[in-house]
Image 1: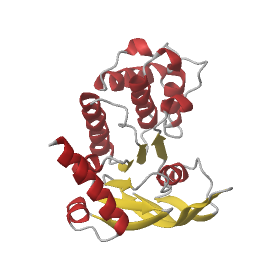
Image 2: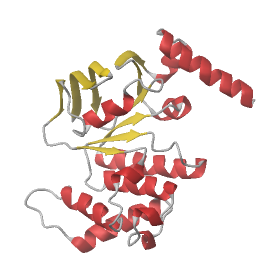
Image 3: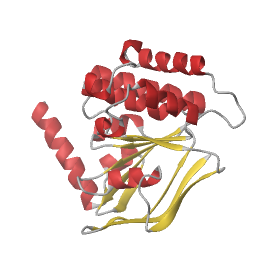
Image 4: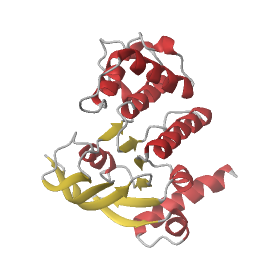
Length: 245
C-alpha cells in the first residue's frame, strides 16, 4: 500500500500558503521523517494528510483505497474530550477499525487496549480517568494508543516524543516499530529532533516556507546537505552536540 500526496497546497487566511505544492509518497513499512524550522508547515501538512485540514489544491490518497491514515498530535490535551473518561475515545477508535461486516467485540477491544497501555508502561487503571486527571506524558501515550487502535495503514506522528523522557520515548518508538512490522504500517514522523529521525527513518524530507526543499536518506542528508535550510539545521544540531560534549 502507498500513501500518495500530489501538489498539495493549504492556504490560511492572513498567512498565505502554509503548505505549497507538496508531493510525496510513503510505502507500507516505510518510515519517512519530516523536519524543518518552526513555521515551515510541517504540522499543517500532517493534519492535511489525515483529512483534518482541507487542502485548497492537490490530493491525498492511498492505493489501494481502503487504507486509513491516523495522526497522533503533539498537544494531546486538545484532542480528548475533557468531560469523558479516556476509555471512551479509545474504544471508539478501536470500533472504527473493525472491518466491515465483522462483529465489534467490546471485551476483546478492552483487552487489546489494556495490552497496549501495558506495553507503553501504563496501567489499565487510567482508563476511567478524564484527560485532566492524567499526566501530560501519559496523555501523549494515550493519544498514540488511540491512533493505533483502528490499525491504520499509515500513522503520522507530530512531535509526540518532544515532552517524553528518554525511557518513555524508547517505549513509544518500540511500540510503533512492532506495530509497523506486524501490520505493515507506513509511518511519517514530524520532528525537530534530527537524531531521532536519523536513527529511525528510511528517508527524511526537509521543509521550509511550506515547501519540501530537500530529501534523501539520513546519512547523505546530514553529512552532505545541499539546501541552505538543511545546512542550517545540521549546523545547529552540531553546535548543540559540541556544547554538550
